[in-house]
Length: 124
Image 1 (cartoon, rainbow, N blue to C red):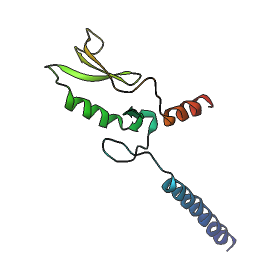
Image 2 (cartoon, one colour):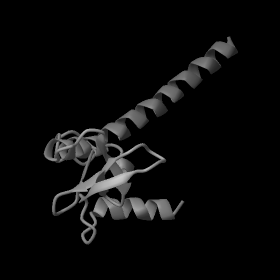
Image 3 (tube, rainbow, N blue to C red):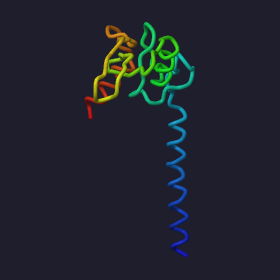
Image 4 (cartoon, rainbow, N blue to C red):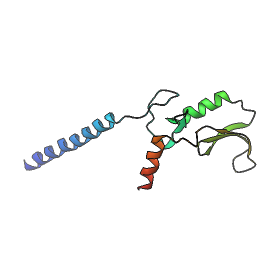
């Protein structure tokens, strides 16, 4: 009988912790993507958009660039780092040629969300 009482005591405490986590997760507010208007939950992969560098989904930014830029045969859009994209041709690892460099994210005005991530990564 003692075993039943002990096991019944353990299960509610686990459920309580799980429910507390769910409540916390649901209360946490995520910034809204200015392109698709959905929440951006993974800020590490976000790209700053606009004058205020609001976080946007990487895939949304890639889609927006592909809709505005004309690609030739065997060309593709590639992320080259620091908020920059490029239109490239050629096979990866071989003769890659950059036809056009697209600076998407502003360098001079970093968003507060980006600064917060940098501080958190430094403190690890």
